[in-house]
Image (cartoon, rainbow, N blue to C red; front, side, top):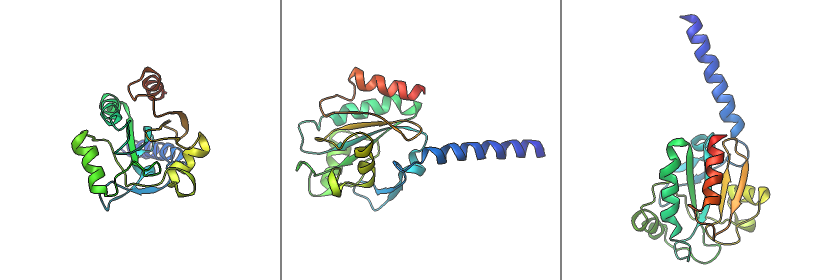
Length: 180
């Protein structure tokens, strides 16, 4: 009986260390959920997952990508993929009211993946995650730039606005990251 508890404790310690290792500076911050007062610590919530981070906008020619982002999320979420959406008005295409932004995401496009409060994604006004993404790759050049982050918290690739979420290049990279 004691051996079983010791082994269970060692297993928990190992998992805890692995989760801590994946909580590098990229994920080590909290951000408010869209149209909510709820703060979520990205490290605690998504450590060990493959993450696709996307800067979004409600009035952009690429806004229709919400549908394919949701389809990608549904297809691979049970395998460990999470899509994180960050609305931004850095390109002057986001609605001023977060409730309106939430309606576009949740009602118009049926988004179920986590969406966060409107924030900056470029320059000095960028939130901490996008500052780290810019250091690892580059700052978004437009809305719907996508960053693929591995289970270890390292940025694996970025994809521009014109790359559809179900495009073979992006989806292949997601599958590869999930298989690691």
